[in-house]
Image (cartoon, rainbow, N blue to C red):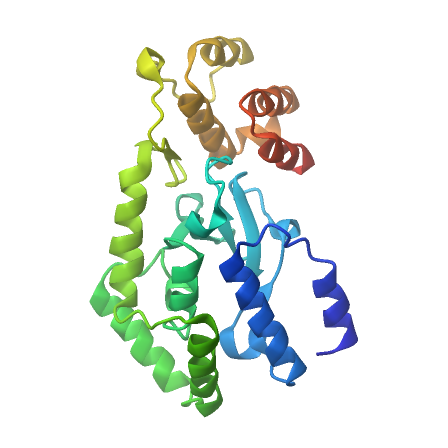
Length: 282
């Protein structure tokens, strides 16, 4: 591991990593000490919140990236509702994609993310999830990738090493796992859909009668209308509005609205998300 890379990784703020991802980082560091590049063989490097783009949901904590096109992987905290990040969904952000495809679910939790890493060797569902629409199409992508890249005995050796070190397992049907199992679990949690596809999860808390109040984000809305809406809406609907405002870019274009939403996030106890919104200058 060269000095510059070692210094760069030392400066990353990954203090939030749950035990599984800390163990994965330890594995990558052990490889580096052996003169083997984790990035080269598994296709991912460590990153942190500095990787976030305006498409990165405020409640996503970036921790890995393939190093191209701004793509990054993060933990979805559901605005701090997930206090045990071992239970957080792992999502992939693709900033160069159409906005509706910029956020993709990748794994149900960090443990299964390691299983995914051990199974999708070419990261096909990370790079191509928006355009892969069937299992047959995934298999064609896989066949093309296998033909393009020669069998890598070193990667096979490292896969076995990773499985032993992390007690991980292979996901036999990667397409079905990502597109069906992961999506089904997320859909079961969502109480309000949002434009980015992430939705707002409730986790058993009810918003009462206020949840009947809805609001459509359009170019014609005024700040006064938004203020009135927030006076009546439940926290779930406020969070849905914030997701949609970020998706449309309105949240970054109107400084007065941005300042208002920062205050509203703090009122709801979402201090970290409020700070992230304040830090976004675009």
